[in-house]
Length: 267
Image (cartoon, helix red, strand yellow):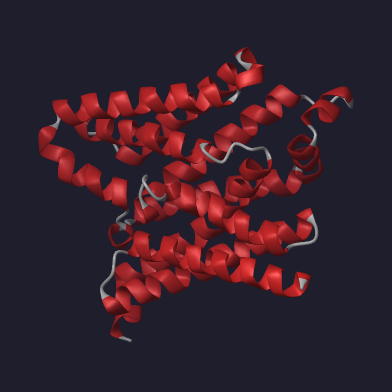
């Protein structure tokens, strides 16, 4: 168990444990609002920001975060414009993100290897600055969710009723989008942009299949996220596997187990 005493692995465990709280929690709200693909969209936009960060020699995660927040505002604006075709907003912003990323990759061929670590995850290279950013994001997300739990619950299950009751729906939609952008930007170095949506959606799918209430689902997504991330990191470290891929495959295994459990209890 020498790997557990390694400083880089301890940083990985801390970062993974923090993001395993916020990503599944925000994913639950997105899944229930049928916006599961927003994770992929903001992740691709974040990669464009990361690439620009390398290009202009600025902390890549910060630039990726800025891009994701701007994209979240864009998604919300397009959702209001195309109310009957809300999924168009996701497709349009994702296309723009991929286009920008490809342009920045072309301009900065020398840093492509560095950007690849954000595409596929590089949790073992987390720095003290990365951990600080992840911790701040975790604090912000938990604070907002705990303080605005009732409002977010109403908005998630019935946006029209929330508007009628006087809730500032537009404001809370923007808040959810910004929180999602924060989480994704913090998570891409852990599981990678190509896999980050799995950390958002699969724990939610597991929890919704076996939970009996929204409150129970909120607790379960965090437990499932923690189990998958910590166990996945340990397995990856011991057997020299890709951490991001191992975490996602473990999440899929947990999903299969939860669906089997649900079927057994129904019988």
